Amino acid sequence: MLKQTLRNWVFFVTAVLAGSLSLNASAAVEKTMTVHATAYNSVPGQTDDDPWVAAWNNRLRPGDKVIAVSRDLEKHGLTNGAKVKIEGLPGTYTVRDRMNKRFTNRIDVWMEKDIKKARKWGKKKLKIVFKPVK
Image 1 (tube, rainbow, N blue to C red):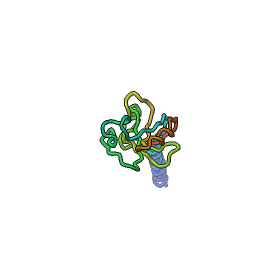
Image 2 (image 1 turned 120 degrees about the horizontal axis):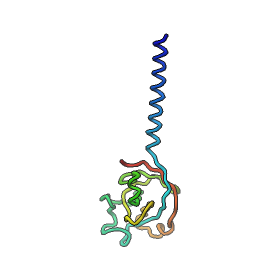
Image 3 (image 1 turned 30 degrees about the vertical axis):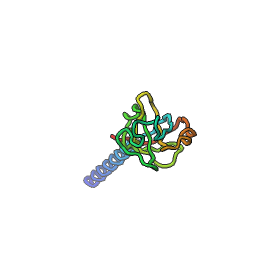
Image 4 (image 1 turned 135 degrees about the vertical axis):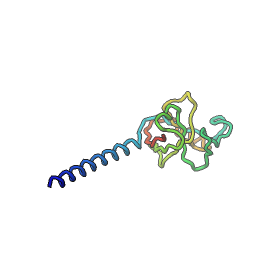
């Protein structure tokens, strides 16, 4: 009887600890933060020499959902390949570009060549949810 009780207790403690660890692991997977959001286009004057190549040498293609991030956000795991959900926009965006170091706490949503759409978007303060890249 004592062995069975001890076995049950060990099983219970192991199950609780395993559940606790998995909850902590999943909680650490996603982060939420409030940032300033603007938009940019692949046109001369808004990008470097090749407007279709982003900061980490990723080639941007029409239809991609891409953002650039200010460099201070990189320390939070918002770096090349991070997946981001943006308040007010459908789908998931991928970090593929980085902004000039003069910007802080900011993302830039890539809107291909549609300058009117980018201007209409303007500047917003909103929440993002993301999975950090280590």
